[in-house]
Length: 224
Picture (spheres, rainbow, N blue to C red):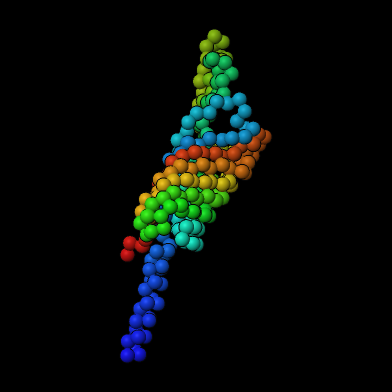
């Protein structure tokens, strides 16, 4: 009889622990983001900037802290950059397009608002700093000005090069925040805002990375 009671007690003790372990166990994160990127700061004075699309692809882990809060570090390949034009007259201008590719590490904190059930939905807010290192880039400058050989005409020249080795620093740092809707603790859709706090310009005129976008996140357990 005593062994029977011990078995029942052990069962009652272990079942809640197993349920909590399943409910709050770490999950993997797949992150996909489509965004518009630009520079801000003194280095953009006098320019008219255009929409420049970019993407971000990342993976991470979600470590539950409480029923609503979790620590979600993420590693991502992130595109940033700038597309702007400086008009000196109707026929004279400089158009520059800068495409930057970073490897970012983001130690985010995520808060869920809504149902706490295993397959419940609700709002999710995540935010944290990011630390980026520039991997490679490409910059294109289109200059249109008077033709020295024919003063009444204009000539357009295009030059390409690398900004990281010339006028931009590779290290970037700032903060990022996301707000979205999560469904069944599996898929999350929302918007993001990212702002750099580290001047990436190596010369005069400060430049800071900035972006606004839409994200898709998938949270999944171990398949095997």
